[in-house]
Image (tube, rainbow, N blue to C red):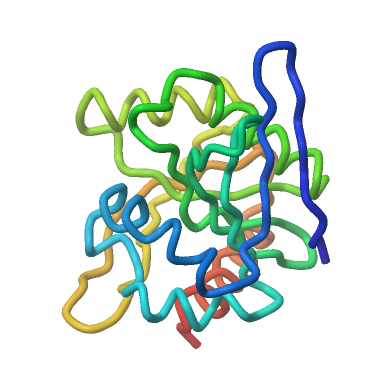
Length: 188
């Protein structure tokens, strides 16, 4: 399991992914977590608090070289792959390469296939987000996919899967999706 701090350095900026290890640390991401994702696409924050103490859900604060909180990422480690559940950079810090450096740090730190969900490309913002992931080595998987409900009255949502691996066999991808649904969303 990956637990160490990851640091990626460039001439201009350094990005540090620091694993959240306390409820105080977790509170630092609350506002961005709630503002960056629609209610239907995220957990209730109290549920996130429960996950932060486990071994499979890894929640990282993204810090700049000056120690400024820049964003967060929530990862799930599986034996054969990593699933990025949520990833956000503060709006005022976007465009500075923080997202790219964060993805590079995740790729370096884990050396596994990475899978994530993104919105359907229905508007300029969602199209830009998909292009960002594509520039960073992710590929859209041609498969219909629904994110399970986060509970309560929240609906399942059609999303796109993207991955650093483009050559999935159907049964392998099916297995990965079942594992995500079971561990991340609690679907048996």
